[in-house]
Image (cartoon, rainbow, N blue to C red; front, side, top):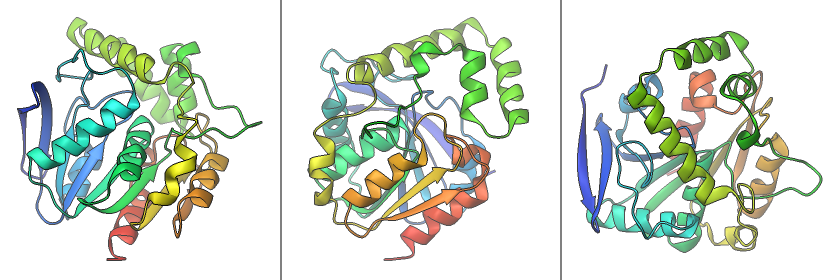
Length: 261
């Protein structure tokens, strides 16, 4: 396992939980609605070739829940401040689901500190006539079953959820409430984002599970059509979390995008 550490960093008065490990080019990973509770295997794999920075968003995990956090735009500007505060340059920005939406909102505002962008099953856009999965209506068990193509992984997640401590349940609830605040209405998208994705001028990779029940692959096609020069890779027999279900395909996509520089 790569050497890594967890610390709390103050960003404009917001105590922010940050995990960091590995060495090499800087890679900032933005998590999805489920949060990031540990140094996960996919972070360890990334840390074999990159300096991986994995914060808990404001309102998630061990980070503060600041009064100023009202919408996804606030989150995007927070991460612009985050990169400035840490002095990050030439960042390889990777985001999954909600984190992918945040990453795209950052990139349409400024790519001054961003070298590449990788969106993994990202929220943020809407495709008329193709409904997205509604995690707010699913039980924990149903959500796990719909997140993964491989139902053995889903069953493992269901079993682990049954053994969560009270503290872990509190964090899960915190993550859920913040996700709702950011994406309840309209559901998991910003109607204006699609108009501005042409501003993303850095190499962009879109990684999508063929069997994504949350945002079907046509959502990846919408991103591809809106971001000039972007590449879409559909990963077969894979659900909403390619970095967890098809790690090698995920790593190959990230590496391929970064190697364009």
